[in-house]
Length: 195
Image (cartoon, rainbow, N blue to C red; front, side):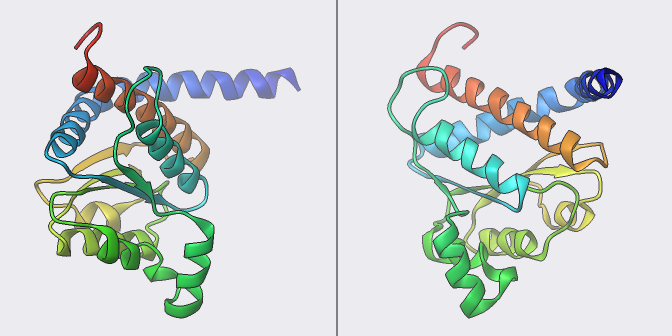
């Protein structure tokens, strides 16, 4: 049994090592984009399915409340509120659960952060299209199999692609990417070591 645990830890360590050099410049660019949009009076919308929905909630909570630094809240909305999702699913179908909210809440200059773990879900594809229709930029945290999501991104968008097929490894690296993003955002907006 302990061998299984050790194997999981070793796989996690290796996945992080393999991704660090590739993701570091992309995470830095994404943090600068988020800071620029926030300083220009815009907000961050986020969404994802399954485990990725939890990640969307984590980044929203970290921006809206705080990450490590006690500071004023930043304008962020998770599109994963269950009551809204079930209502939209009932009336419009699952593929529109995020796009309907983006069309209603999003404004030109706002930023959409999309989390996907390699499943190319139609609702995230619709969300990206709706964001582009509203002249919003997109940051997509994706897995290796998210080719349809990747294909929708334009030159203004940023993709943080985890080159892995395992949904749990992808989610773990996306969580780490969130923490890095939040720390960089706080340092750029509120100063501190490394700003």
